Image (cartoon, rainbow, N blue to C red; front, side):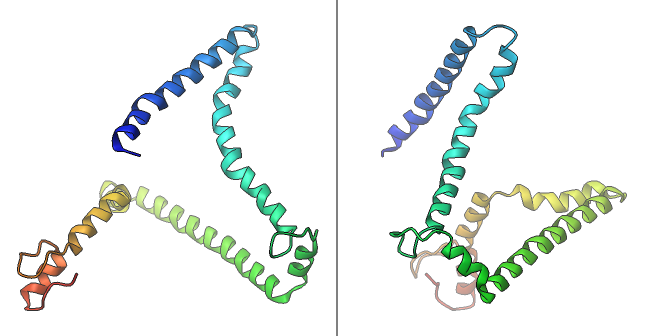
Length: 179
């Protein structure tokens, strides 16, 4: 798809669909009594989000459950045989136990350390500096980080000046650039 078509879709079609949905919901609300409008309006606004949630989360989950009730080739229905094998296998139960331990303790540790740091940072005189040290790295997006690393590793053919920081440093000590 060309960039022009993509731009037209983003600039015209998406806002058009949103305005159309708003218009349609207001038309539906005109048919409803004034007393019922406050009860129905939130559900009309939530409907697209719930629909997407169902499409991208619930539908695949149902597919996963159906697949778990089939053989390994996905052709024959075997019922709860896979589950009985899983819960009867010592290796599978060990793996399940290890995963649950990781889930519980890593979550508790992460939340606990985060809460401790938040409380401690909130009580110091240099609170604004401490918060900056913690939150500035979060403000740098992955795109910005990717661009920074692109410039760090930038490669130009041998004989031309190296603009990448690492290749320039390697070139300064007499080693040729690394592509």
